[in-house]
Length: 458
Image (cartoon, rainbow, N blue to C red; front, side, top):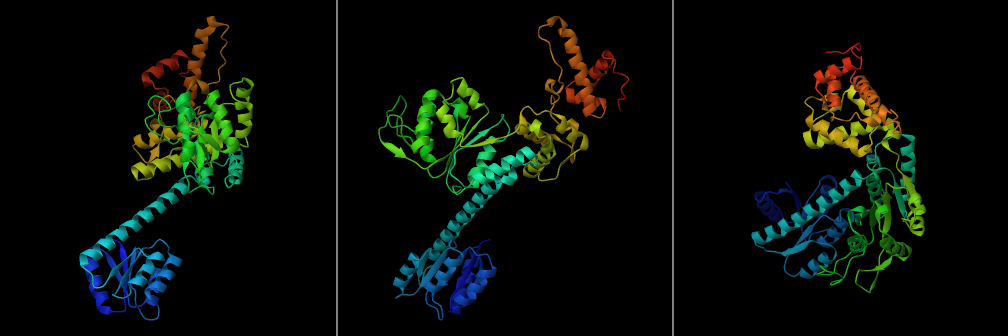
């Protein structure tokens, strides 16, 4: 319920207006002077102030100035008698939401009040969303305490407040976009757009149009002028994901934009100047791409002003418990609205897995486990099947001796069974679940590889 403060030195108006607005569903407070109203303002969260213009000691205009110094977004509606309309206009120039002339119709007052409160509701919601967005993309949301990640924190913390171009490298799933968002939302450009383009998802023609826009008739299907992502990001940040996939022809245009922040739309002749901070990301080694002549060296130097390299998850396994707990809390609270935790054996398994898909793969595994878990603790049985992979086994294969392949496959199978039993504390049912096979099938393979001597708990 929204709260309205009514300020008037005439008590009759206070009583009548309070009764009327209460009937309309508002909570009301009253003050007989601006001084009393300012005391209430200090201790109460208000949604609207409805104040008379002419009051002793401090009139409505001076009262309005005091309000706007403290809470510039709070709407104020002025009530004015005949002969003080000029003062009401002055109040509007100082930031009053509206004014209404006494005597007034209740319906007119209701319309003005509803509009003022509704507008303020939108202002508060927008501020809440901006704050939530900034919090969501703060450095605290990049989870980890490993030394390699601390280096990343140090770099992005120092570069966020500058205009420097940033190149983020790392394997798929390491969190490159998360770092880009953290840089933007902790920069002076946080209130301007962050525009993202996936360079690998578009053909050369479409990518050029997407980045720089096009004029009407520039090509078949261009039925109207369209602004590109550089124009959309003006004043803010442009994040080019998978920059290593940009075709050679587009690389040339991109280089020019980075040099002088100007370009022409496709099919256009007018030069457009923009103020954009560029952040690029790639899972490729651009130095190798330069050597292979698939990426321009001059563009690479322009992009590589500040380099942030994200280590793969397998190189910072000490972060896995923190990440797992973070994702468990995230999905348990967002979806189930209740607590969940990870059992010790499940956490041991998560820490031992290589996570070829990095943080993204871990997050998806935890999300699935949270949604499908039956108890308060996530166990091995709740984790996705197939997480035990050949990449965990580290068995070399001599491809020059294909005749030995059957023996090699047997070795892999034996190693896989041993790995599954180790991760499941020798519980047969859980080991079979990890391998995605029936328990009877596992028992057969235990005998096949002379592993029946292993103690298997029921």
